[in-house]
Every structure is written in structure tokens, then in C-alpha cells.
Amino acid sequence: MKRPAISLLLLCVGLTDVALAETVSVEMTAKELPLQIDNAGTTHAMWTFGGTIPGPLIRVKQGDVVDFTLHNAESNHQSHSMDFHAAQVDVLDEFAPIKPGKTKKFKFKAKVPGVFIYHCGSEAMSEHISRGMYGVIIVDPREGYSAQFPKPDREYVIVQGDLFEEGTKPKDITMGRGWEGSLINGKLFHYDPVHDSNASIALESEPGERVRLYFVNASINESAAFHPIAGIWERVWDNGNPKNVRYDMQTVDVPPAHGMVFDIVSPADRATNNAIVDHRMKHALNGAITVLMNYKGADPDKGRNGNLILR
Ligand SMILES: [Cu+2]
Image 1 (cartoon, rainbow, N blue to C red):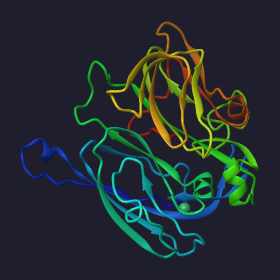
Image 2 (image 1 turned 180 degrees about the vertical axis):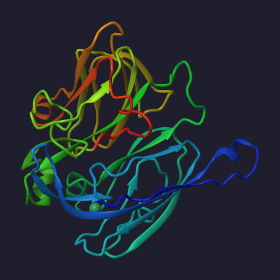
Image 3 (image 1 turned 90 degrees about the vertical axis):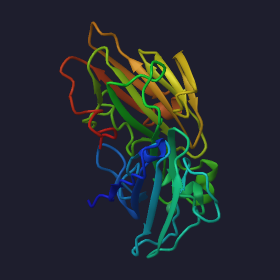
Image 4 (image 1 turned 120 degrees about the horizontal axis):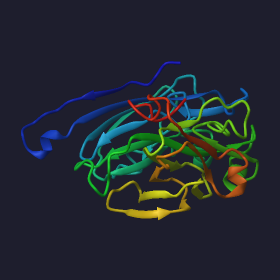
């Protein structure tokens, strides 16, 4: 599968703080294609940014300019658009849809730090989002890490979305009819070998490590009650902004089209496992359970070196 190009273009303009800002070129192609939606190999007709659910992770620093290009593949049947929640622009201009075969470009400055969803905003938006047209942009704070916002040992991105029965009409999707389950990074029980014998991946860390989860709820109607079974969120940052810190939380509701940052630190003296769930049982038992294994000898590459979304 061809990967969308994300390249960095450095624009150093002096020695002031502004000089550290970069222009980050991001190019994506909207692709309508059959995709695997579970660990058993079942496919559904999905719509995507770049051919995966979620779309490619974008990561910039606060103050950077995102120079964005959207291609709507000629073979597609739908108009598509891009709505970055990290942008402050004009919904009728930058976020306007384009027809198949067309290309659109716009720029925005990522002024606010945090974890943001991006999604397609074309009609019917509920269908475009629930078929998979969403992803994550992390805007790292300009000031970097601090005592209040410590450097994590590992980082993972988890995006929860909906799965509807094939052929569900947009009106029904909007009303929640034909809902089948909750996708975690594009698959039911994606990282849950406990409940799904076909699952082959779990999140991993060493005992005592600080694991940071960038969680985005791409469900169209319902919040996600995010909870780490057998653990406590050591810190939670609403919207992922270092200013919005909360300590020692059990369950935190994340509304549709919102993102938060969650830190968990497992006991250092033993191996443990957490089941990270949307505690709405309807969601958990239909796909939204993720296992985090904390053990000596954890895969050193998972949650590191840009490996935030396990595919
Ligand atoms: Cu779309």
C-alpha cells in the first residue's frame, strides 16, 4: 500500500523564537477501498485518508505552519474534504469539499498545543466519519516537557470509531441504527488477544514506565468513558494541553470529535496487564478493549521512534 507523503520543509528565518517554527508539508489522498475491520480478516467498504484507519499521524510543534494538500482520487465516487480541529480558518473556504479527481491546498498555523482529531466534513458527515475518514494531529507544546508535563517513556495513539453494517443509509447512521461495534485504530478488539483469539498485537511497556496515550474519540454520537482496568490514570490533560492537567483519575469521558492525553504508570516491581476500555459496556464488549502489557523485555520499539499507531 502506498504511504501518503509527509515531508518536512525547514524555514529558518532568524534567531528569534519564530525562527524555530517550521512549515510542515502534509499530503493526503482520500481513498475509498475495502479494508479489514477485525482481526479475522472481514472487510467492509470504507473511506479513508491515505488508505488506513485512522489516517496518517501528523505531529508538529506549536507555532508550526501546516501546508496541506488533499487529493480526492479519480476512482472515488464521493466528494471529500478535510477538517482539522487544530486549525482556526474558514469552514466554507479551507474545509470545503472537492470532487473526485480534484486537489485542494490550504495552510494553517497550529497555534494551540494538544491532541486533535481531523476528519472529513462532506455530506453526510456522519457517514464519511463512520466509514473511516479521520485521524490525529498532535501539536506538541512549544515549551517542551516540564515537571507538570513530564517526558513519557512510551507513547501510543488510540482512536476509537464506529462500525456500521454494510449498506447502512446515511440517515440511519446519523441516528445510530445499524451500529455494529467500536473500532480501535480501525479494527474491533484490535489490541485485545484476551477477548479475540485472532488478535496478535497488544500495547507494551516495561514495569514502571510512564506510558502516554493520545486518545481521540471519532465516534459520531457517543462519548467514550476511558478507563484503564487494573490501573489509574496518573495524569490526564484535557485536549492534551499541558495547562489542563488532572491527577489520579479513574474514568474520563471523551466526547465525540475530542482528544485527551492520558498517562499511566504501572507498578515497577512486577509484571502487570491493563485492559484499557471505553467503560460504556456496549462499546467495550463490541470492540473497544485494548490490552497494555507491562513486563520485563517489552518490545523496545513499540510506542517509540515514531511507532505510535500499531498497525
Ligand atoms: Cu469524505
